[in-house]
Image (cartoon, rainbow over all chains, first blue to last red; front, top):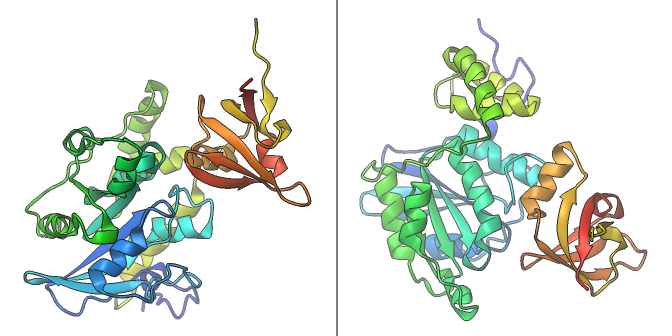
Length: 255
Length: 80
């Protein structure tokens, strides 16, 4: 008789971020990005939904779900709240981070604003630290053109080590390529290899010490380096959640 | 000639300035960095709310509202 979620009276993270796949050819794709980068436009264009406002009532992820089919797969697209970061300074950031962390989407699209790449890439790098399966979608290319900003998408892709697709979501430009790229990442035809963020030597030294200690303890599906970084940060909240998640995974019938 | 840095909340409406240093620590510091308040970034003071707090700032093409308490921890050099 293990503990169950109902007996421990704690709304389980497993429940909270559990997206139901009804068949084996379904894949889960998360949409992340800064506010006002056109995430919802992309969401609406891909899923055909028009009612979606992107305001998250409470902390459920089921409301911002849409579907689209591509070749032999059905894609469950989840629109995350617009955030500048994943460091849980606000409820939105917590929701976005937890989804990427615990719902384990097959791919995460990070939508960035071509006119303001620098700040947007901050979030992209944070997502790349959690998961490898990241696609960068450089949106609002038409706005960038108006401002005479040119973006070398190929070079950006090489620098980051992940696929990069340029789009103008408003008039569907680039969305076909985006869908093909997402398909290829989900079916392992493309395997993104995000270049790890290298920190100053003092941090890296401590990181290695922590890593050697925690690696055997990290539950499968979590990136040990990322968890070691959170330990250094002193972010106890995420560590509690991972522990709870791992406990529930073992105890709940549905996990 | 040493430049004089002043807290962002002391910059007048309509003026632009350049971020020099952050005095904030912990999550507040992280938040500011995430919003793009890093050294050498240009910030324009857009408008103050009727009660003087918060104030709207234009940074990296985005309007961000900061409270006095937060803005006072961002040291800037005013563009003359």
